[in-house]
Length: 266
Image 1 (cartoon, rainbow, N blue to C red):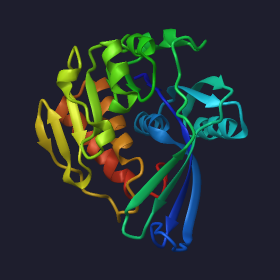
Image 2 (image 1 turned 90 degrees about the vertical axis):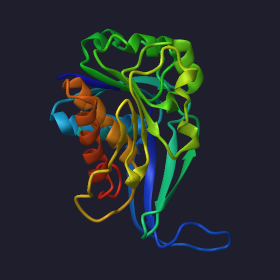
Image 3 (image 1 turned 135 degrees about the horizontal axis):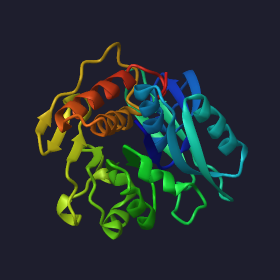
């Protein structure tokens, strides 16, 4: 099974803190980690772990030391990278989590997104059994439809989804994040499945209705990457020709496992 992701990367510093920042207060970091993360990277790594096969990742990075570090780390995690190099700096981020699992994220810089005009091996998209998109322009999203199964996050942004006007097999996003709220009537054609996650409450799928979250396989650590891990499981299941319900269950298991790790990869 051949899987791929088209999307973005953020180099993220993860800090476990004694308390989330408050005005005038000084907090302390109890644990720290730096990883190439962001939706595209997390989905691709989770796919590679599920299939035990290399996953192609089409992305854009800045021509800087951070961009080079992203490539080295993600290759070590089982990805085959195709990078459009930019003169802009690679986006960075800071993710803080307190002892109760609450978190706050700050991103630094613009999101770098691949484009169909980038000289990357886009012809490989037609060989994909499953493809997930987190960042692209409209022409690239249309080219992604060559994959047998195509899913995307609303973070691709509504104007891009509307301009591309491609039939998505699934649109997968957070039902709790206003930035991922999309009315399916705004899209023509409408996605074949619309899946909204709600953290520990499970989520809702059309078709299908409500679904439950999977039990955590260990203590809760943090929620960074849980939604992206869920999306990876769903797309992998659909690419393997599982039913939508079975694919959602696989996604829920991936999201639950991610919640027991510090950082998205453990």
